Image (cartoon, rainbow, N blue to C red; front, top):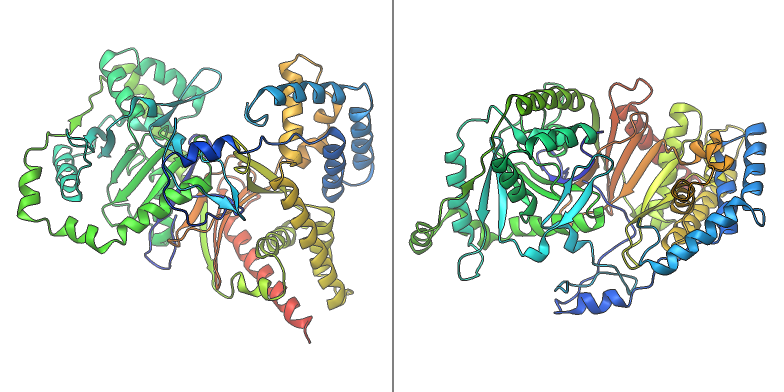
Length: 589
């Protein structure tokens, strides 16, 4: 989705243990006790993200090019790399400038005290800063760039609730500072539903689905009115937004899981629930009349690994029998306590003819975008991570090679594949990318279906490709990914008014970083699946969850792109996984 750019995590659970958002696979939280102040102490001890050397990045960049560029184009690209990194050249100048920035900032790759269990990977503590960016935060449109504003220091005590495209302020704390009980929340939500029985004819929330520059102009119009400013500010400052959705119409050729997933991603269009959102909120929890539930989160505020923890926490509450019993069977005492609660405050908007025109335009664009989403879900239940582990192979690398093989079989060329990698082992770390396409993976996908190659040869190619992927993963985890480094050097040239070096203008640079497939693994404890909106209309997003005996996939593409097909790619990946398992079995004969 070009206009929304969100991540969604959802549990529909109508067919299989499936759901609907996104993350990366490298961070596995371990159990930890809740220690007051530990978050801040741990945070100060985290190292800064290292800055790779120019030579190291250039060498690995050439290795990437060798997998996707050939002939004279590769020869020219190599020469441009040599020119770029020569002593006294522009590359060395940019690197020195970046080193100065790195010495004065917490994290060169990024242009309150609290109480949380500290997450770790293999005993190494992770940056917890993002948890304090998800709640009470909101994206604000701007003429050139958006801003992300955090309101947690004002300590808001309320959430906003959207129902039938109307917005309400719901205090979630009593006057004595205690949280509302489950029964009290149920009563208040029921009051909200009764106060908004019909869909609003002017769904202001749908403006947040617009392309960012268009939304910025509409935002200026909206904020000219004092009533509108107060209502928008209330939404922006709230802890999060709870969206109570109408039932989604069932499409004849679409499974309920896919329909539910689209509900979480974009709301289903202007006639469904797309106006029952404020997509600039960092976190929206969504509940449908049919029981479908999930969330929609901004990547700009936090990465999928953090959103995963929120998703698992919500799912755990839903499984708490005591909490659910209380919601369905409130006691007389509880009912009496709820009667004194103040009515949730409805937020009002002054709709001028100009704003009404903006809303109608947003409806039309949203409907086009919603119809253009090509989304498919597949539970691959033939095997899970146990099979590659039995052969001492990395499950993630094995799946990554299957995705590359599936893509190669469809297009007869190697795709450039991005795999999300968490940098939370460093202070302020976010996401960097693993350029998963390598010379070794290219040799594997080209040789796998070669009838002249023996099983031993193919196993050797598979082993080398997985070894190469593991090395790339290790490099990225240690803060030495080429993606972020090269892109930052390019941006720095613009910032310092330096003539853009030829290396960045060459077609090979676009091929290296204009990824065909964006991939991300996240495995939620509650068995929901991740979904990521697609920014590139000519590519794919593949999110996957890996369990012992199955692998869940969600693939998104764009219907209007005739070169892509989520259905075909997901089937091709499944066939590749089965064929690779057969290869493993044949190697033991």
